[in-house]
Length: 161
Image (cartoon, rainbow, N blue to C red; front, side):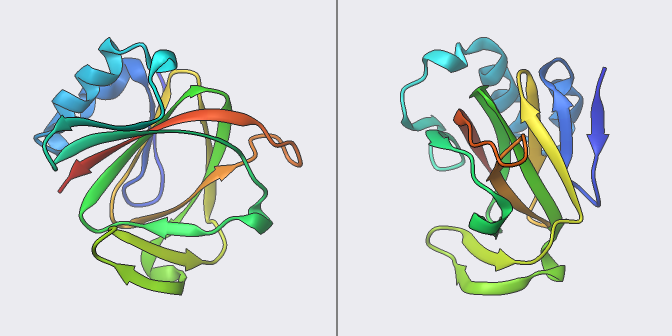
């Protein structure tokens, strides 16, 4: 069993352990049930509403990138649950308050673009999920292998706070 709490809040865990975190948010049970009962590889790109405005999944495909090409992001209205249907990627982590602002927080998009250096990185792929809270600025989409881009299919579930 693998579960790791990074920094203050970010959690990286195997799918088999997801329900350990049900008590952290009333919508987690529904999100985790959906993850465990869905053929993630067959999902179409786009947004999937799980519970109107309070729980949804964004399905994306892209190539990972280098640290030099990336930036941090943070959110205030939603918790992210990030997982991959195919491929691997690294995610950098740092406390939001320790980073510099690139763009002002956009409340409409719930998006804050930041810069800085990761205190830690984690790799997700296979049956691993990363749970990111508002305090967790994250630098997603990073190459899992240094210098090697990889095509990934990612599901980012947004859970209202």
